[in-house]
Length: 234
Image (cartoon, rainbow, N blue to C red; front, top):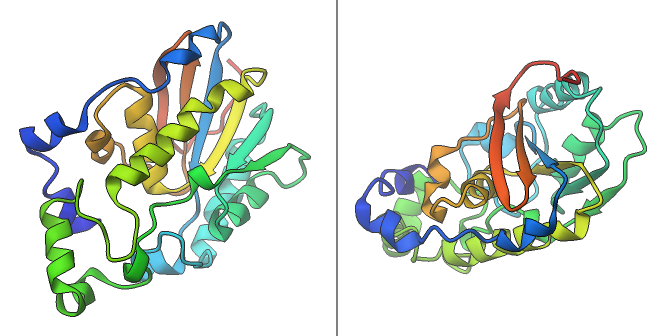
């Protein structure tokens, strides 16, 4: 969301977001749970600069290579369970990372990228001409305006927070691999750190990298962001 990002850095936007922790009920988790965060590999829509929320877009050769590299980087990571979005690019990425393993997978719609409605698979330059009024409103007030026939940021935030509220269902797992999307993972990091939802812009989750957040007794610690190193047991 390039134009919208420019609108983030204002006190008004941050104040309106609120910074309530949405996983305080996870204080029952005494043992540390690690969330391993992976964004899907590069897609054709990424290369073309198109909005691709729920629209299908395949991994490029580079994206396939990124996922295969993550297979090597994370080959020793002790995943108990994989949580991924419904979208093909996340499924393909997860399959390549987990090749040779029989790790259980749960598919969760809460982990799908934000839905851009009529703007799916379109470039922002085209929208300035073809849906000028709605697009201008969204760029001006991206937290409250909604893409035409799409999902607004407030609804998107509630969806990701529903996922956070469900984490206690996996309290028997110590290592969860989450394969999802830029918007979801950035927002997930911000909310777990009890930051305003609009703070997602501070966390760019890159492709071909892995990140990690540790949760324990209702407290989250960002341990790794965008690593390209081989993980080894400490």
